[in-house]
Length: 249
Length: 249
Image (cartoon, rainbow over all chains, first blue to last red; front, side, top):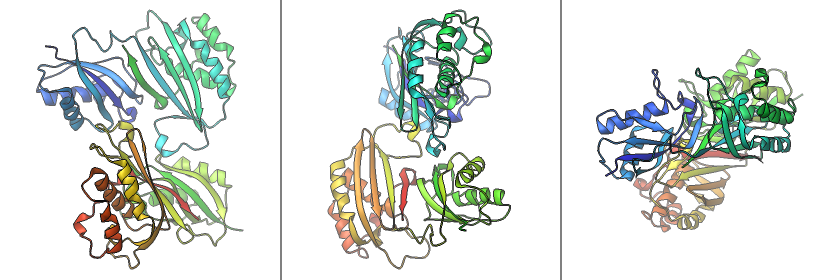
C-alpha cells in the first residue's frame, strides 16, 4: 500500500525566504514540514520539484512526502494541512502515488511565467507580484527576440553563481510566449529544466531588448559563445514577477 | 489659482485600520496626511469621499486636499507621494480642481464590488481579497434575488450600528450585477450612497439566498418593513471581499 503523497502547492512567495529549508526557517519547505510534523507527530521530509528563490511565487509547485502511515484520504490531508499552514501557502490538490514517482527526478519540464507592469504607477494589488517598469517597451521586438531562446542551447551566459558551478548548462526551451494585456506584459517559458536564476536572466535580457538598450542579436551571440559573453551584460529581473506555473511529468 | 488637489487613491486594505484617521494611526488617511506633511512641512487635511472599514480595499477611492502652495505639477505630486507611501497605498491619478469640488459632498454615487471565491481551497493570491465560501451556490438565484435591491428603498434592515444611528436610511440602488467566472463570483453594486456595512449586509443576504438558507422573498420583505425585520437575520459578509470601485461625480 503506497504512502507516498504527491502535493500541488501554491504560494505567494513575498513573505517567505524561498522554497528550500534553511537554518533561519520561514521557507515554504519549512512550513510544510512543520505542518506534517504536527499532524504525524514525527519529522516528515518534503521533496520539492525544485527550489524557488525568496520572493518567487508558485501557482503549482509539486512535492512529495513519504507518510509514516496512510492516515487520511487526500481530501482530509488538504483540510488538515491548510488548517495549519499560513494562508499564503496552500495545498491545492494532493493524491497518493506509487513509490516510483519522485517530485524532482520524475519531472520532465517546467513552465514559468514572468509578469511586468508597464505603466506609471504599480497598483497596490500587483505589489510584490510584478516587476514595475515605467519606460515604454517594444513588446513586438521582445516577442521576436524571445524566440532565439527556443531549442537546445548552452545557457552558461544566463545563469547566476550559487556557490557550486553547474557542470552541464545545456537546456531545452520548448516555447517562449510574450503577451500584453493592458499594462501587464507576461512572458511564459516552457522548458525541460532551468538553471539558477535563468528565467530572470532571460527576462532581464528581453527587457533590455524591449527598451532598446541591447540589440536582439545579443541573445543568439550569448547562446552561441556563452563563455565569451561579457558577464557585465547579465541582469536578473527581480523575484517579484516570477511564478512557477506548473511542473510537467 | 486653485490649490485644491483631487486624488484617485487605490489601496489594499488588508494591512490598514480602514480609511478614517484614528488615534492608533495606520489608516489610509493617516498615511496620506503624513506623506503630505512630509512634503509640505505642515499639516494637510485629506478629505475622502467616504470611509472604508479595516480590511476593505479600494480600486479608486477619491479624496481632495487644499495645498498650502501649488508647489508641483500633478505628475510630480504622484511621484512624490508614492515615493513616501507604502506600496499598498498608491496615488493612481491626481489633478487640480476648483474650490467648488468636494470629495464627499460633490459625490453623486459609488460603485462597490464584492468578490467571493467559491471552491474547496482559497488560492494564496486571493487571500484577504475574497470571501472564501466552500459550499456550492445557486448563482442564478442570487442574480435574480439581487434585483430586489434595485430602486429607492429604506435600507434600515441592511445597516450596522456605528454609534450614532442614521436618521435617513433611504438610498437608491441603480444596479446590482452578479457574475461568475470560474470559482470567482463577483457582485457589483451601483448606488447614490451606501449606509454603514450596507454592501456587506446585502452580500450576506444574497449568499444565504444562494446557499438556500433564506428565501429570496425575504429581501423584498425586509425592504418593505425594515423596522419589523428580525435583526438576527443580519449577516455582514467579511471585509476581505469588498472593493470600492469608483466614486461618481
